[in-house]
Length: 253
Image (cartoon, rainbow, N blue to C red; front, side, top):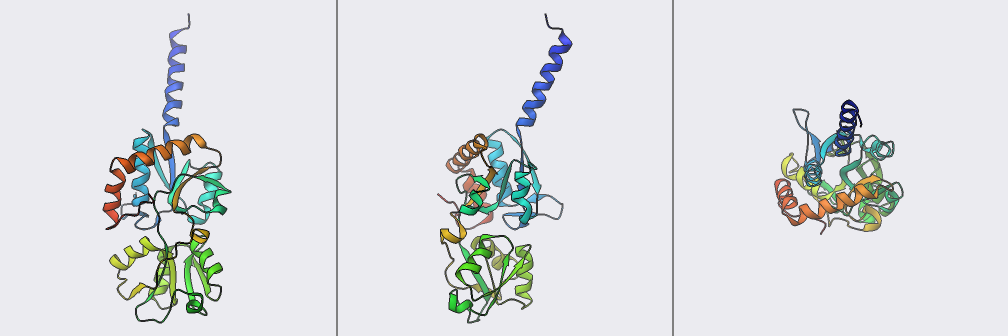
């Protein structure tokens, strides 16, 4: 007969392991409003964060949200600092060599924003000789570099910083995610600026939408996330979160 104290210790160890297994550490950037940002009280908020929490709730897992600077976010995942990335990360062939992605949970094009009345156009000729701001290590940086080689590329650590330089007149325009910049134009004093031309949605440059990244080969977590994503899209949870942030659907379905 096994002594009670040994059984109790074994049960405690099992419960501790189970609790740990049901806690997911989710990384986001925290500097990409309204998708992810840190509010005045120091809490991480935004569309990405609410989607992550909804997925955790559907999977009956505790959700721990951590912030990580963008250019170190994939290395942090590969180093085991967190289990997944929910940070508006575009699914691209290059990134798929480093991480595995869920199905896309939203889709948006790459928009050019410039001062109202400026003659800049969203064409190779229109951007020739223009100084264009982009966030470093993003699909938007690759897009401008490859599709608009005549532009002078200026990179920034955050979208907020390239927007500040645009407002200060140090840039001719910026190329960034369409929905993100819609929010900036509407809510952050962007009335002196406007979209120029149609957003670029070329999969070759900006990927097939934003996906949740997990460590390469983690098929168990990938399947759980895809299942939960499908459920929140079907039961109305996704639509409720979407409506809280945007007046139009950004679903990739």
